[in-house]
Length: 180
Image (tube, rainbow, N blue to C red; front, side, top):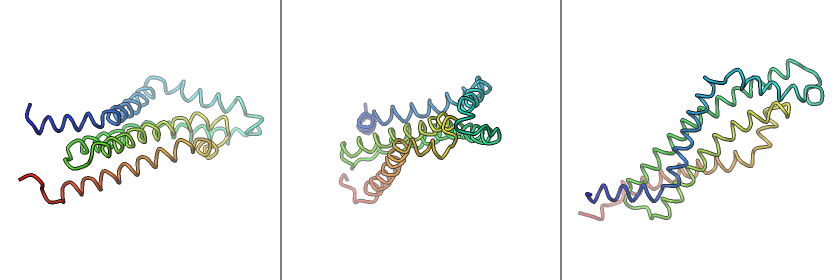
């Protein structure tokens, strides 16, 4: 095994938990998309049933409001699917980039990879959970607010992780070479 390949593999192992979470996030996004194809009607019916269960108490019998919340909940399902694929792939790419860098300490790479993986999975899951919760609460805003405990830290981990990758990349590629 050549030294550069060995170093890259070692770098991947350092970020292995973040890598696994990023790939799990991509799988979540793809599987959710597959569920749309296989179970779109039952998924929509479930959202409607959740709203109908509280039609009188939460919606005051307003069918138009029920339809509006259910439609927006379906859009949140689509966001969960799209965020899973896109943010998962972005996190995966940044973690692989971290593995290729020479300078950052292992602890910093590990923490950054973990932040990206957790943030990706958490933020994608947030949209799915908000979609499921909204019909019963009568509002997508109420659903998002009730899940802010998940959304805010997840988005924060993604932002901090992405900024860390940028800083570590700049340090690694613009600092004077230590090996000649």
